[in-house]
Length: 204
Image (cartoon, rainbow, N blue to C red; front, side, top):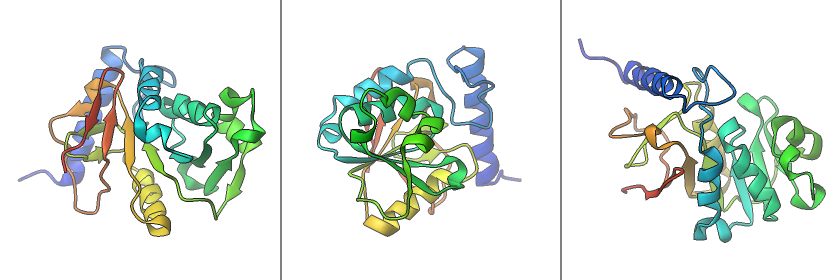
């Protein structure tokens, strides 16, 4: 009997979580199982993204709320970009943080607690020029595996419905870039993968 796509996805998640913990690539919060894993090198990946042309042209950026993308959120605020962040599990929808309101406090404002303090819950917000998502695993074809609850896809689908197509970047550790991610047609694809060591333009 062949495995279902859902089972194959879960098997790959377990493999990545296990590998990241055993090789000590995964960092706080631990254990990384059930999460978008935070990793040693997340800040280096954020800095690599920061020097890209796609980033420089961005005035409004959407970033997921997970720990490995915290530095991406901080950099966005430091670089004067309007930051749109999904609240965890989308319980409180989307949060808009104006960089002008957090000068000198970008580090704290880029945390979930800080986002709720300095941001405003927003139904209407300007179109993001770039979406940054976290992933458990990705492949060169733009297939992305989240932690299994579907929030990343919901965030992307919501933004697509509101604004049309927006380029999607994911920041991950090199071990999270795999040969093939099991996928279904409804899964949202990413355009660019940024790791601490390289930038990969996904094959269309």
